[in-house]
Length: 104
Image (cartoon, rainbow, N blue to C red):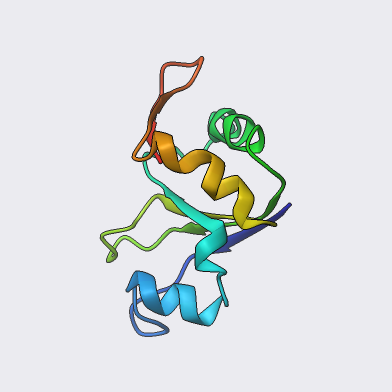
């Protein structure tokens, strides 16, 4: 999958989530938001969990301290079927093997 790091200063773009969605052409029906990122390799544990539900097309990390979505990511699946499979669990609190808790 493609990893996109969004690290914008406030004068370059807004930290509004919908602007990120529009600018990156996110397929909303195929996507979930993950919060609680550590921006370390520990985040691969939540990725491994999410991959169980379908192929991930890309992950867009929001790394803008001005944003209320700072240290969150938009995980976009290749198919909406993955999100439909996850829907009965949502919102889901995932505790990784390293004891980091993520909210999906």
